[in-house]
Length: 168
Image (cartoon, rainbow, N blue to C red; front, side, top):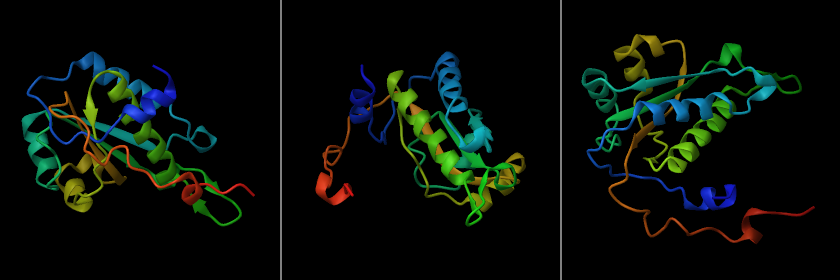
């Protein structure tokens, strides 16, 4: 599959089967995340792989959007270690984490798994429940699993190129 085919085929999966996600597939997703390009290669992120029933319940208590996944990746950025653009002091921790998150979703899809980017969660509560996350800006949750449904009808909807692109 070409990259463009992969980018078009990936969709936000919101329902998973009971089939367990193999550790080998999680390792490949993490490898894709760790090779994501970050500003000045500072890699100001951390990924927590949440698999235990106890910790999954903690994550699920912070969002309505866990989709009963048996694995959830939590992605955090660390502002203190990120590159800062000198002209306006723009910190790139969240940008770098967003690139990492995109690679997580694309690799998951390439491996036959479903995922979605969940931004709707109580990050302060999650950091309190899982103190290892306390020093990070928690960016997103990525429920992972085998898709139990296909993409929504809106998956292929897009604004026109004229609305999204400008040649100058």
